[in-house]
Image (cartoon, rainbow, N blue to C red; front, side, top):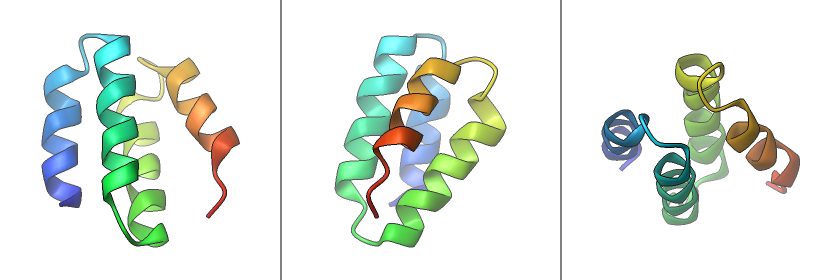
Length: 64
């Protein structure tokens, strides 16, 4: 599942609102906290400069 969400996020990275929506879905779908953290780290590495506000929101909300 993690790899699937990475592909989806790459595909919607051109639009911040779509990126936000798909990241939210991905985090909700992943069961393991370490997978959620891995997805967030991957997003930060790959899209941190493109979508900093979206990613900051999710890092602040982290409760796992």
